[in-house]
Amino acid sequence: FAEEGKRIYGDVIPTVNNQQRFIISKEPVGVVAAITPWNFPIAMITRKAAPALAAGCTVVIKPANETPYCALAIAKLAEKAGIPAGVINVVTGKSQEIGSVFTSHEKVKKLTFTGSTPVGRLLMQQCSSTIKKLALELGGNAPLIVFDDADLDKAVQGAIFAKFRNAGQTCVCANRIYVHDNIYQAFAEKFVQEVQKFKVGNGLEDGVQIGPLINEKAVLKAQQLIDDAVSKGAKIACGGKQHALGQTFYEPSVLTNVDRTMEIVQEEIFGPVAPLIRFTDEADVVAQANDTIFGLA
Image 1 (tube, rainbow, N blue to C red):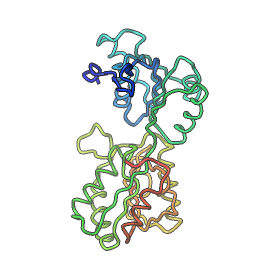
Image 2 (cartoon, rainbow, N blue to C red):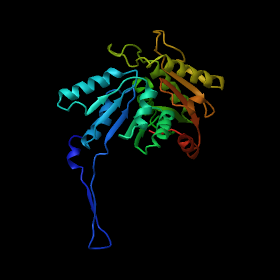
Image 3 (tube, rainbow, N blue to C red):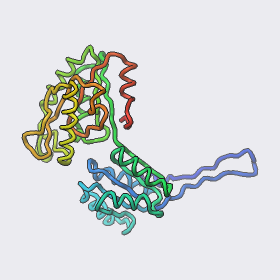
Image 4 (cartoon, rainbow, N blue to C red):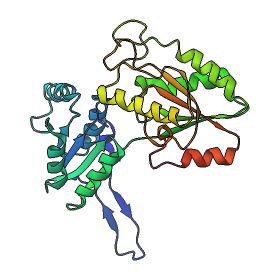
């Protein structure tokens, strides 16, 4: 964005009257409020602040309550790098109270938010009274489809990467893994074998591939989704419970015999739980993949 900021050009648009011309100039919108998530606490701040600064706007950031120090450190580094005090601002505290000020204050001209769909919907409603510009990056329920002509080993490795990055705590993780009936059993067996190899622990230790979930609420959500699926006929192929390490560590889990009636198919999981869904018809699986209120990643 630093380089592209040099190329924020306007436009000259021809008209039907050769005595006139339309000129479009791009100007800063004003104060940009940014509400950022905990799962990428530095990257999401830079993604929001950089284009705003390049366009000539000042920024006020509300970081997630779970990761406030990252935002404070970024702001301090920005000042050390030469950005004047007051151009990048950080406010920590109660999310609802700060969010309410962001959405209602007349001087805030744009709101950018990364987080859950319900909260994004609420912020959109609250911004309507002041007609703010919005940039919303909301929750996902991404599908991954494996057809019967796929290279099984490559498909398994691709699904592993797509599902378990950051212990499943990203909005672009594969939430729903659809596998063709002809290869379902073979895929499931290979997939489970790979998942059982994961080393769970402190991410600062060598060889660790799966770290903890963000808090106890996330552990409870993962367990509730699994319990609901099992009560409706799903089978636990591996995992399915809190890890022996305790605290917020959860076992990498795979569920088979999953179908669309289960909450785990309808909700964003945000944890190391992979549901495998059987399909036979291409048109039907594409329809199922698109049947979500969430974004597709």
